[in-house]
Image 1 (spheres, rainbow, N blue to C red):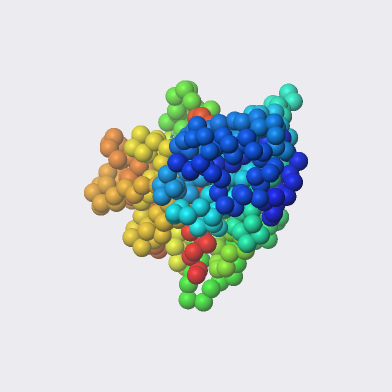
Image 2 (image 1 turned 120 degrees about the horizontal axis):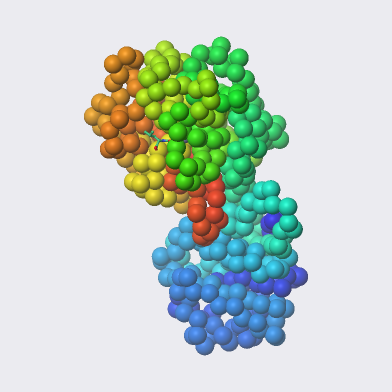
Length: 495
Ligand code: BES
Ligand code: MN
Ligand code: ZN
């Protein structure tokens, strides 16, 4: 879908439907919408004045005015003025978009921003309003058609959003941020046979070429030379060769190392020899969501031309039970030199991340944030929220602030030393699982921590990365989790 911005509220938009919103208890349109009255028609004003529409959040009404320029006018409730959040607006824009996509119309005009802008007593600045609405529209309008051969039903192909000239840049920011997320969603939703480790590396390289990001793709021989034996150990069971991808944007900054993003790129997780049960195994194509988020975030950083030095890393592999696969009890070396006894081959994410985190040391980073669909335990603990763990309170605060800004749910879990107790091995420096049933998300993070020596936060996105049903700006399938957190963190990092 194309998002077109118009700068004059009275500009005639040849669309059959107009979308707007009113606050609870308000019987008039926002002052910014005054010049649109004539086009909306008198019956819309009369309807609002009657009090038949309460303006409660979740309320929606469709009018067919007859007297105005639009065939239909869709009015949403915004709830109480002082309660409106950026994320509520993002959700509203997403819901409106999905409703329009189902309405079999080519085009609609959105006055959602103008419905909030200029209203007194709202706790959001106008730039945030227009940014989040543009973001919500594009995120909500996403649909993965994949490999369906029938003709797609008609959806909106152009949404016209009224944005005053002063806030056009904010709306464009929202658009860019959403598009990076959509790029990640596409990579994730792709079936694993069309998104092998080399396909994923190619997609990252294509993104990098198109947006002025430096990129290097390592093949198996190079990965061997780089001594990433944990990554190699995971990929042994597959006929698909692993890849390691290094992306870089901006130039070294004096006195402050780069901000490094790291992702888990398991393009399919069968569990390996410790094979997974059949139920829902098809979902394990999304086990590369962490890598996809790094690609989407680097795309955003480049398109927003953020000042500073940013590095994106991911390790890509399949986790399969082929004849050469790593067996439970096998020991592999790591890039770091620490040896690891592989007790459970299904705990593969922490292995490939360990080598990536060790490599990140070479950039002398000011901070590293990794993200991974790492543990089923995180889905049990937090549901559709990101689990965050780390070794640096100040960095955690900044990650939390970035998540709050972007509406991504994130919650910190403790990193007490006792959680690492079960990681001792009788034959190697470490084992890859504790064997116990408790706090699996945290013991995974404790394993990763052993491979870090810089300010670091780990995001477990196992629950946040996938949606089972449509809601707000998150249609079912890949969510594109962490892309917007990363983008916001990057935006503030070198200021
Ligand atoms: N990719 C999975 C984690 C996962 C599970 C993500 C469900 C999304 C939904 C990961 O590689 C894995 O298999 N983890 C194991 C760890 C266990 C063996 C300690 C798990 O969570 O069961
Ligand atoms: Mn696994
Ligand atoms: Zn996995």
